[in-house]
Image (cartoon, rainbow, N blue to C red):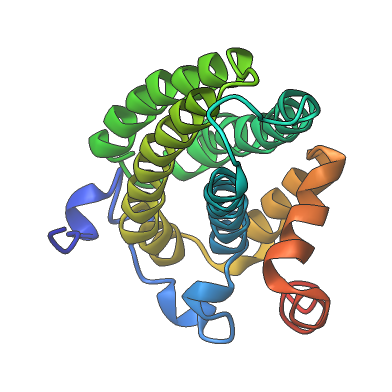
Length: 211
C-alpha cells in the first residue's frame, strides 16, 4: 500500500493542519483502541476457524457431527455479528462524521466495506445450513476463511490510512478520547469480554485500562 499524503487529504489544511501526531507520543499506534478492537475481532475469527479444523479432524465419518454443533456455532456467530456490526456502525456513525471534518475519508475503505457485506452473508448462510454432515462444517470453514481474509484486508486499510490521518489531524484529547469512551459505553456486553480474551487479563489491565 502506498504511503498516504496527509496534506492532500486535508479538508482545510490552513484551519486544520495535519500536525498533531507528536501529541500521540505517549500512545503507540498499536495501543490505540481502534487497533485493540481489530485484534479482538482477529482473534475471534481465527479461534473459530481453528476450532472447526480441530473438530473436523476428530470426526470418524462423514455424518457424525454432534447434534449440539449447529446451536453452539450459531450462538457464537450471532455474538460475533453483534461485535462486528457495532464496530462498523461506530466507524460510520461516530468516527466518520468527526474525522471527515478534517480529512477526506479514503475511497478504498468504502469499497472494502461493500465487499464485507457479501462475504458476511455467505457465512450466515453456511451457519444456517449446518447439519450432521461433515461437509457442512467444511462449507462453513471455507466461508469463514474468505470472510476472515476480507476482514483482515479491511483492518489493514484502516490501520494504514484512517488511523494515521486521525492522529495527524486530531490530538488524543478531547475529541478522540471522548468518542472512544462513548463507543465502549454503547457497545454490546460481549465487546469488553472479547478484548479481555484477545489481550489476556494482565495485558488488558496494564495496557487497555491504562489508555
